[in-house]
Structure formats: structure tokens, C-alpha cells
Image (cartoon, rainbow, N blue to C red; front, side):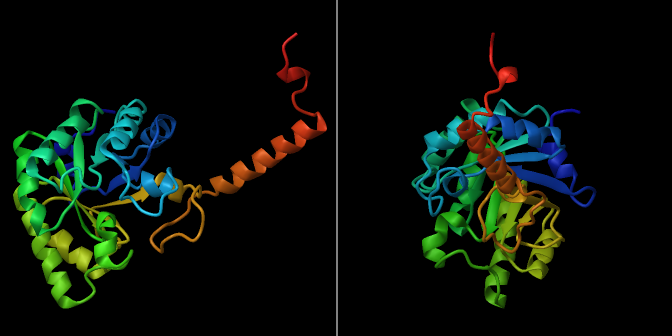
Length: 265
């Protein structure tokens, strides 16, 4: 299988569903890559998923570069995209281009993802001018959780919906190669998907998007409940790990482990 590039992803719209999975370490990335996903995203959601934080706002550029770098070691075929964390692009266009360049140059990413409002359309232009592919992200934007008043469904009324459609078109015009739609009504996601020529990737946005993304910890059942409505568990890894560890605890305390098979003469 050949490395999946931006042109390949762009060509998949209206032809084949795009599969994106968020991962944070090399062994997991290798499993995900071998499973045939198209895009591996190193998300700033590592704040919630890996670091045990209540949101993504404390995640730093250095932490994201570290995780992107180790994820890149586990990938052969999938496209690698990295989230630009809070305040890595909001302060200035110069900072945005410099930090985006670090993800490509130092961490091995092939593209970066930005949570976008109308204020950051020009930022996409500037990053693209540097030859760096950009994935946009609209709808629920976790970096704006305080401004939005929590993790809420977006685009529920007609005015919000119109603004999101217009924003998607601006993001396409600015040069983004794809667009994540998070936590918006299915009909609105379908309308946006039809309105633009770049692929849409949904998370909590229904089945009409050009692709879907889930966090690996969520889809394998490693995250704690409760989970958002859009999450589907394909395994119960958390329970398996707990049972295995309990069995290990019991065997160590009883003297059953290590046995002669686990010991050197």
C-alpha cells in the first residue's frame, strides 16, 4: 500500500468514505495504520484522553510535537495530521506559520488541523503559502469551550446553520484540503458536505459526511463512561485490561507468578 497523501484524500470525495482515527503513541498508531485507516490524527484531545485534564486548553505545542513525533514512528501508510493546540496559532499569523512548520519539520506530520472561525481564514492562507496542508475544523470547537458555554451541539438554529455553511465555503476558498464537522445536526452536515468540493470528516455529524473520525481510546472501550452519543464502542478493552491486571495481582500474591516457565535457571 502506498502512502496516503493530500491529493489522494481530496480525490476520495464522493467516491470512497475516508476513515480517520485519533491516536497518541507509536504502538497504537502501528495497530491503527495496519488496520487500514486513511488518516491518523494526533489530537490535542490528548489533554482529556492521556493527561487526565478537563479540556484541551492546557496542551502545549511541545507536548503535541512530542506525541506527533512518536506516532509518526508507528505509521507507514496512513496520512499523519496534527492538531495545532490552543494559542499556537491564535496570537499571530507569524506564530501560526512557525508552529505549523515545526509539526512538519520536527514531528513528521503531513498536515495540520485548525479550529476555525472567520477570524482565522487569513491564517489558513498564510500556512498554505508556506506549503503546509491544512485541515479545518468547525462546529463544536473544544478550544473555545468556555466561549461556547460547554460541549454543546452547534448549528441548531437557521442563523447558526447559515453561518457554518458560509464558513465552510470560506475555509475551502482559503485552501484547506478537508474539513472536520463536529457535533452539528446531520441535515446541516449533509448540506455543508454538498456545498463544498473538499471532503468533510464528521464526528457527531451524521452519516452523510465524506468520512468519519473517532478517538482510538473511545472506539475500543478504553475510555471511561459516560461517552458522547456519537461514540460507538467496538470492543471493551478497559474491562479486559482490568481483568488481566486483577488476575496478575492475585497470582503474585498467591505465589503462582512467576512460575518456573517465567524464571531463568
